[in-house]
Length: 313
Image (cartoon, rainbow, N blue to C red; front, side):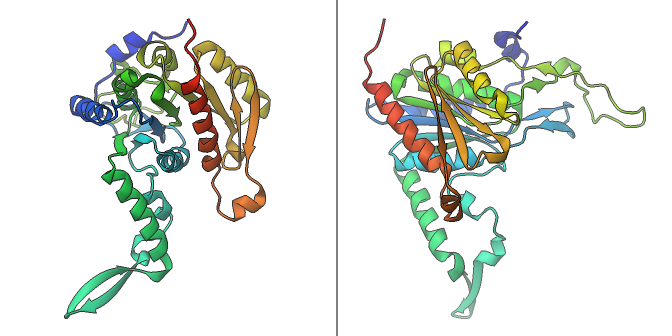
């Protein structure tokens, strides 16, 4: 029997700053009540499942946040306003370009009027300048709003708050659910209060299923939005069938299916009627092209068609 999402929320601790986050979300969305601007909610990074109330140990989900952070930049290029909901310390738009670099190696030290002056190394100056220009432009236009989470419960509370804030914008909203969300959790009443000790041997921890939040999201929270989920698999034989089963179960618009080993080079776009591949050649990969550019190009066209389609009763 599938877990009840209402009971799940009732037993999950709310983030301490949830009310302030709701206000900020509503303020951001209010700017775009003009009936024109499209908004994307992008979720990114993995969620943790604490094993103790005073958390030392936790179960984590694999995700660096690459897909979400890169896609956010391309949504902004297409004129969307973006709510970027990300795991703390995962990749962020624009700053992601320098995550793999040693920060101090990017700086040079000169002297001016007897005082040390920091400058950006010539090696990185153009890249830093371009990323900074785009980032500052997004902020100046009020097009980028970032919210962070760490735990599964924080993610789910924020996702509901963001969805409900966006609901009045109807079909202008895309939900791009790229976060790697845990399928399992430890109920609060079964968690140790303090750090689990090792003196008595390995602990026995029972993980419970997390209810599928896509169901209330699609049917109740943002019923008119263009909702996209992701399916990551390691067995290619299951990829398309699982993606289509998800569409049939939750009735959202699209699943972006990808294999763990090839996710940066190839994805399959799956809707209820068809599926097709978006991929990069080896030459494109060597040039540093990003598959997210082509994913977002495709989604923008789909969203335009969705917006222009007549409502059916």
